[in-house]
Length: 401
Image 1 (tube, rainbow, N blue to C red):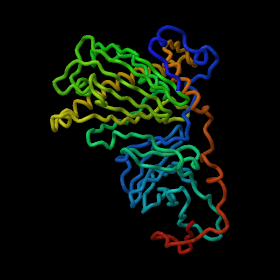
Image 2 (image 1 turned 60 degrees about the vertical axis):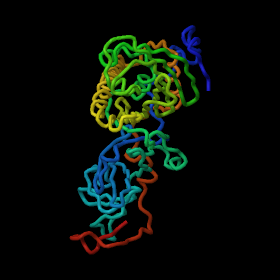
Image 3 (image 1 turned 90 degrees about the horizontal axis):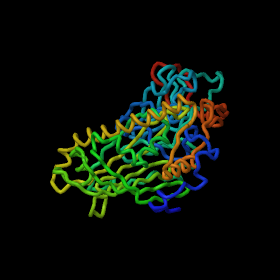
């Protein structure tokens, strides 16, 4: 990793490799790398024997939870008439299309076509199935090469399992390219935006370091005046009575995720931690879904955090709403201008842009209906196994695949 001191940051131009005028690719046209685990739903939103619709970068996905409790993720279309499978019905561990009752296993393979006779044409094998894992109250899918899924670790959120912390979960759609979200959190020089909530804060960049897939920055925050929301003091570990401290905040983009830790003055561990992921929803990746886990250390007064929880939620939602207003305005400007005319002067942000460019992938036209054609478009093999009874009311010549 390359480490940069604050003195270096303020005294000179960024290295040439970060010069935005050197012909680098427009970051807003770079897509996220699909070979990572991405959250696409809250676990609580995928109920047993129910289906939930979601998406990743223009790929529509049907999530369903079988009778065993396991969650499955399938391409959200029936291979028959292309009707969304998210409109379907869950039976045991299979998902049945609402139209002609074609049934699919959790891997996307067709398990039954109720009315198919032996002399009929051979059907397709099915639709794409995505590797799925549940963790931290979220449903993750692996939208990239499925052969890489098992060897790719989920993001680490160690504080989530700590008895010393209480966790608040966020799930919001933001109409902007995911890169604007990384920049917003890393660039703490935008505190003027939050002056009505946080008062006057003076952020001082203590230094930062960069690597091939990461950027980490440390800031010193000092409250210099103005009315500060009491909840902000609680988040900073000052208790319900509030106070004034100099807090050190560490923010890190570890591609493709982001984390934030705030350590109050004189403390040896964070008062709160944030983990966030920004998941593109549309094919052009101009809208993303922000998933966040805010982990707060419980104060010494028993039950105090529980009492303050609604106020904390309201406070954090207000701060997030101001950030969303700003990044969505940035996205609108990009769309109106047709290009990135951003004149960034902060080397830290130039560095994170390079990390996002280097680890991302080119945006491509929408692929065929199935992301893995060889798994979906080929005809079923000759040796299809016919098994199990047909649903009630079907023909005795029913075949199952």
